[in-house]
Length: 130
Image 1 (cartoon, rainbow, N blue to C red):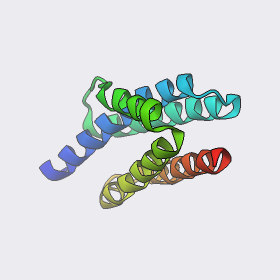
Image 2: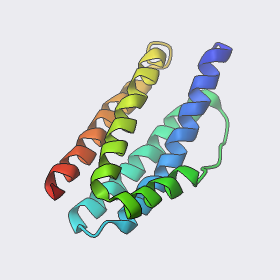
Image 3: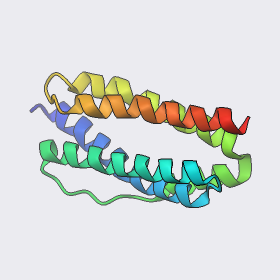
Image 4: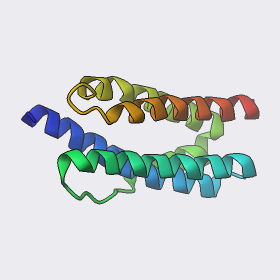
């Protein structure tokens, strides 16, 4: 594994851990019972992603809640529409980085599929509330 690949994996692992907190807190904030459960499942997916990445990095990282605080602030101030657009974009923006790693680390392919699905979930919630 190259130093560059390791740095990319560690950054992705941290992002996935942070996303667990983000989606758990978002689930707590959302009133819609269907999406409350859906976002809990997304949080679990993100935890699974962090575990996949940990298999490659062999490093235990701690989640940071700053991103979750920022997203909840945006949710409360700007509303669900802005928040869901940002989440969908964030999920899709993560895919190119994973694509650079998938050949060397094959289990990452499941993460790519989930990230695209998570973007669609955010977009479907956006459509529901529009």
